[in-house]
Amino acid sequence: MIIYPDDRVLVAVMNNPADWQHVQDEGWYRIPVKHAPAQVPHIDWLAFFFTRAFGDDRWAVHYFARVTGHELVTRRDLLPQQPGHPRAGDWYYRLELGPLQHRLPPIVAGKWRRVTFIFTTGDRFEAAEELGDLLLDAGAGGAPFVTLKEEEPDSGYF
Image (cartoon, rainbow, N blue to C red; front, side, top):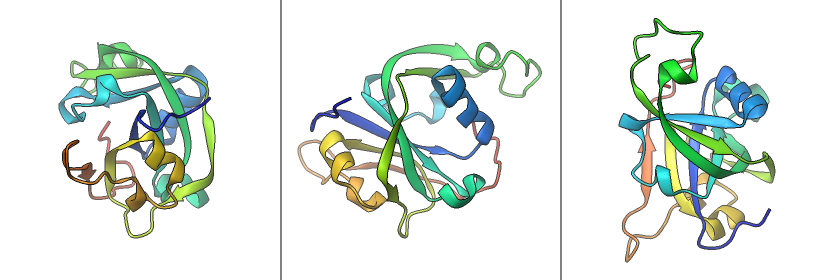
């Protein structure tokens, strides 16, 4: 698959191996609507920044996938085995994904380790060696979109 220079790429935190299983086995990823960047319904690619929960793969982007569609659903619909979850009624974007692509070499964190989302372009994603390379210059496109978050082993954030 080809990433075009002006494609919209969202790098999202992956801090939960169970969520990674959904990506790998079922081809979807979830983002709570109340925490989602405004660009989410309009992205072309989703990349995954692994946290310490992923051992030797931590602090890097190793995988990405084309976003083939999205829908708004409740957490209850996404995870019916958790009907009593405190956020069961909350709305989520369910992003449908194409096949996973392996990013070689991975994009490493460098000094960045508290990211939840970075919005970038295809050309920056293709050229990046570390997360800071993904940041867009402020200008006609606006300031870069980066959300920072304290790292927690399993925060239950999503």
